[in-house]
Image (tube, rainbow, N blue to C red):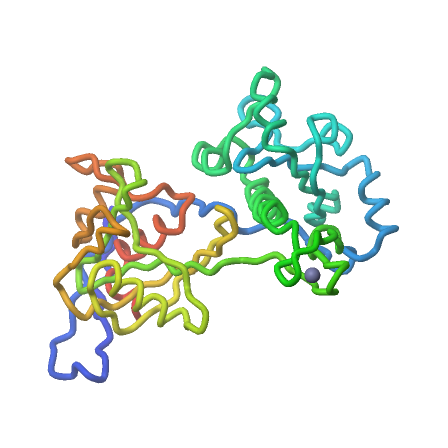
Length: 339
Ligand SMILES: [Zn+2]
């Protein structure tokens, strides 16, 4: 079934002389798929992070569960159809040397923790038949755990990756202490307090009428094309970061920027800020240091890619990634996404 939404893109005040664009009919792509790592059911109860007695009680709670992570790898209990990512705290300790424990919060009142194990210890666990050791991208893309576990796994992975890389004070170089149940590191030498970082990344689709620009990073799967993306820099707004990144990567100037949605992306600790951008120019100049290639795609070609029916086998990123949803919204609504 094709739903027709013959809409008209709003005119910018500066293009009064230009006729409004007609948006072609909406493609029926079926029900929207689930975006990964969002809609956490965890209540973070930050008020308990400094309450040692409460944390002790929560650790001893029979409902307590721990996600076990080392470097990029997550330890799962192998089972079918879905693996179980939760270990009792004592089980988690028995898996190897624990570096840090963080309190993630309560899920349906059950305490949830993240345990960071030695990456080497995790490698050794690969020999065990009762465990499955894999990375969080694979877990999300292959649906290896129940969806409710993805947000706390992302929370644990990003937080524990911060601990792994911030053991010493950037101010004076002394070793810092873990406090606030893993949500702060304090320096005993200079008194500085350090908080976990989240790095903002803008990810955007530059569009003009019925077409948009996709690019390919050399590290992508050979057939995959995606939105452009890059880190927002200090002293820069989201809109400025979007315009700068598109100009740097493909040489296209952008006008209007419309926020779409965001997604935690714990690789290692980003938040993806999804936007649509109005492309003001046509000619693409690819920054070969950043991209293998970039080109224009029209909405019909994107439909084929989203449906995995492209004649050349080209694809979009999987539904777990926000790029899939940014592209899909343009396929469904055309340049109305800029209104
Ligand atoms: Zn210090």
